[in-house]
Structures are given as structure tokens and as C-alpha cells.
Image 1 (cartoon, rainbow, N blue to C red):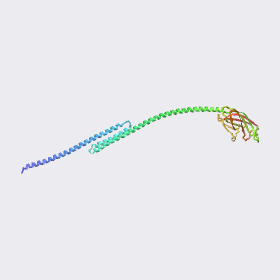
Image 2 (image 1 turned 90 degrees about the vertical axis):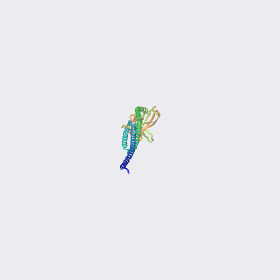
Image 3 (image 1 turned 60 degrees about the vertical axis):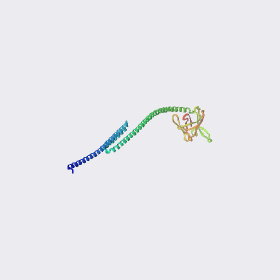
Image 4 (image 1 turned 30 degrees about the vertical axis):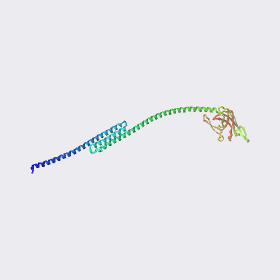
Length: 325
């Protein structure tokens, strides 16, 4: 048998060795796990840093793109400020996600969404800028068109004013010419009047045979026969001429019966209206012509002096008287 002391030492040594081997194994296992954790944390740190760098890059690139769109348009600039604020909010949210390794995938997706949002904002700004430019070009065209129209209106206004002045001048000249024409027309009318003379005025009574018997007693006559000579006038064109006879009775009244051809004539110069008794149309050939008019009113005549007036073209061209007993 061996020495008990030696055996005890061997047993203790064995236990110690086994304990040391266990400690060494644990330490080796723990080291391996720590190495894995360190590698994992290093990888996550590297990924976080890369994502942070990518976030910074995309964010500041977006800000730079937005700033390039800035100009003098207040509406466009206000929209840029709004979009920058929204991107800043989105960046801060992603930065918060990067602090937690569990949210790295979410952060990665949010960085992609930030880039997409920035591109969307940039597209909206480009569209708005193009629309504003098109609107500005349209306004410029409208301004030019308005200026051109204003110039045309000014030209037309001046032309109208000149035309109005010309019309006023023409109207004045026309009025003067009309006055001259009226004066000349009156002169022509007066010059074309056919004068009469050689009156022969007598009362008459009709016999049973229809013949006229000359009488001078008012109670016995049936009518008055007025004859006169129309003088020649070279100004008058040949044709029908009308002579109006006016018989004024001793009371100063014009003898007139509408049913027997009486009426009213007007003096061309004065406009005065004259009641006439009878008229006679005569074919006139620029030479002396004998004209007779019978006035048989079927009413009794009064004794006294009768005045006979003859008119041509509205003018008094001759007169005579006859007395009845």
C-alpha cells in the first residue's frame, strides 16, 4: 500500500487540476463569446456609422438641391423653407433610430424614404418654377399685347378725333352749302316764276243753251270768268304750269269751296299759307299764253269790289279787280 499522504496529495492535485481545467474552459468559452459580441458590436457600430454618414449625405444633398431652387419668387421660397423643415424632422427621427441597434433596418428604410421625399420635393419645386416661368412669360406677352393694344387704341382715338373734326368741318361746310343752296333755290324759284298781265275779269250768266252772257250785276250772275296772259320766261323748262287764282269778295273773305278745287298754297320764302279759290294747269312753251278760269260756286254774289290774285309756284304774279253792281 502506498503512503496515505501521497495519495491524498495526488487526489488534491487531481481536483486542483480538474478545477483549473474547468476554469480554463470557462475562460476560453467566455472569451469566445466576448469576441463574438465585440465583433457583433463592431459590425453594428460600423453599420451605424455608415448609415449616419449616408443620412448626413442624403440630408445635406437634399438641402443643397432645394437651395439651388431658391429665387425671387416668394411663394417658391416659402415652399422651400417648409420642405427643409420637414426634412429636418425626418432626419432627426432617423438619427434617433440609429441610437438603437434594433432599429437599424428601420433607419435604413427611413434614409431611403428621406431620399425619395427629397426627390419628390425637388420635382414639385421644378414643376412650380416651370409653371411660374410660363405664367411670367404669359404675363409678359399679355403686357406687351396690352401695350400694343393701348397704342392701337391711342392711334384709333386720334384718328377718331381727327375724323370727328373732319366731320364737324364737313357738317359746317355742308350747312353753309345748304344755306347757299337754299338761297340759290329761292332765287331760282323766284326767277322761274311766270308773271301774268292783261287781266280781263267779268261776271257772266249761263243761258239755256249753255252759252255765257256777260253781266255786271251781282244778283244776276252765276260766276266770274278770269282771263289773263302768262308772259314768256326763258328760264322755265317747257311743260305743265299751274296757276292758282284767289278771289276775295267785298267783305275781304277768300271765296273757296274745297269740293270745287279750292285749297291752300304756301309761299316758299316765307312759309305763309294762302287760301286759293281755283287753279288751272296750262301747257307752257316759254311763250305768252292766254289762260282763263271760270269760278261758278253756285252761291249768290254780293255787290261790291272783288279782288283777283294769281299765284305761280307759291308767289303772287299778278292781280286785278272787278266791281259788281
